[in-house]
Image (cartoon, rainbow, N blue to C red; front, side):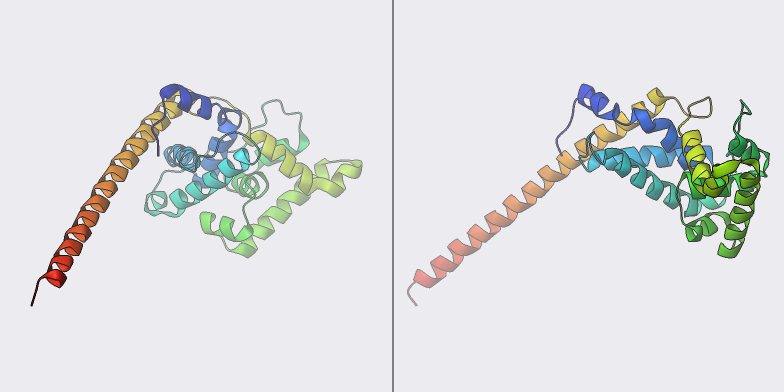
Length: 234
């Protein structure tokens, strides 16, 4: 991997910024812990950068996929089991959205189920693994929450309550706010990790090159020895 200048890294990182808050908020909901969420976010950004993926079609989905994988690994790993639960839950500061208002009134564990399912798009099986509930419990709680949200809606909106819940929660995940780490803070960590990875890759390439040259030298020496043995009169 070629080393990139700080300016090149900044240009690449700007592609991340439009969904930066969404990525962290999703990671926080999945991990349940702020520090693990920030670690997962940094890991996902570095992973996509190492894949040499730049802005364009599919870039955001690649980031979301990498973030989901990193967050799940962090949450289900050894560090995730004893981590403090810091996820703040869903808030509806304006109080004018019937769905968010209803979800904000729920217990935090129910709010998290809704965000994981409708905001992050996780399967019921994966949510059960993250929360320690059975799949039947997850489905039951989600169905009851959807019913309560539906009663708050009117007319045709009731028939599409599930779709509206997903729309509201995805929009809620994309919000910024004081609970999201500073972009500059995560960028500095990314820049250091990217530089370190590039240097490591460069050193590894040089080391492998030396090994290959040494093997070629041995092969040549062996060939000369064999030739000398064959041409020497018996």
